[in-house]
Length: 329
Length: 128
Ligand code: HEM
Image 1 (cartoon, rainbow over the protein chains, first blue to last red):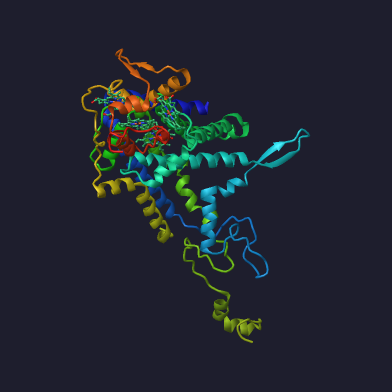
Image 2 (cartoon, rainbow over the protein chains, first blue to last red):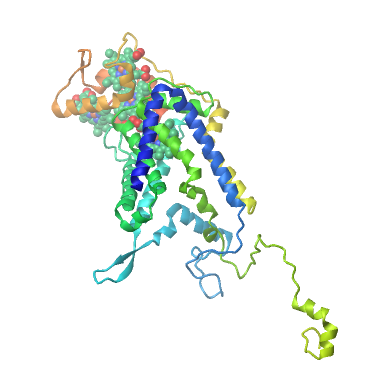
């Protein structure tokens, strides 16, 4: 049901793009992408700045290895970082290879009704395949936005098409992203535990990106578009002299509208994990509590009256009563 | 704001990376016009209508290749009933003699590198 709601929204977006682009192409080719990009940039900036205003009261890295201790005990630098460089290494592993997801487990009941936890590397593999493919696809799309096209982007495209199957060449990342998205979607649909905790906001991004990937692949293999027209539009947008060339197909407008919807949606959704991963206190703080004091920036100035001051204040009375004091003997 | 010394530069870097096609193209004064192609002299029409060719010539060539090589079917009749020999070098480059100023120029613009020329030859007539 929740998946159906999300699917309905995606289909609605497709219908809007289809109908709208036929009536007012300039709005869908120029105004919508500009607006979506503005919402994306502004939204991410404000969201990050809002996060930056939240204090971190404690140093709370969640670690999973031996911390720095006595010289003869080996520290696990990446699992329990002590210096900023070690934190950087840990963050890089997390961001580039999803280190913590690698430890993902799943709970299963054995036939004898015993609960056991098993490693579940499939989710890690699916997530990795999806995110890396997305990155490579976005980088390859730079061919529409840059003139001349940098060698590195050309090389990336050549590597991606290294199998040289089909015309146009089969791209490895297209296969990977479709497979990974279908797996991630299937996991939410068919695993009862995950389905129970899945909301429309979990299905929507998956279906939206699936829609983007499918329209892109259709443009490449089924309903061919005039790519020179696409590049003219893309370049004209980047130099702020938008022109809408002839020959853009409805499929292209759907692709572009779904992409615009996606980037405008990012700042308001769980997709903000793009920025959030960098600001996770459990990841980005060093485990050096004992060596370096973490001052809670939130601390309200509290009037303190220490024991020494108290003793000083009642010195004479305490002395007269013969009560032993720490201060003077 | 806390940790502004790290968060603000990180944010600025992110914004710069995301928008770099914009400022790069504006700074370079990149023209958005597609490159001028050297069209064959003495002909007015391609084997199919120009918009069709522009979008689907790779599929046409792929079909030609399969039909010619696998089914020995080398005669192509277009939508106007005109006949052409299914041949990459002979037909396409028979009219589009200057591969550099035509195929390559557009492919360079779009970042496409067909591997056909590993085996097929382009006519010597045009600038190689
Ligand atoms: C989040 C951003 C985007 C994603 C994930 C995405 C995804 C895809 C995918 C998976 C394909 C299939 C072919 C390939 O992998 O190259 C594709 C093709 C395509 N995309 Fe996108 N796209 C995005 C943004 C855009 C934008 C902004 C444009 C507008 C310039 C665009 C225009 C196209 C075109 C014209 C094709 C057909 C390419 C061809 O025929 O080779 N895409 N897209």
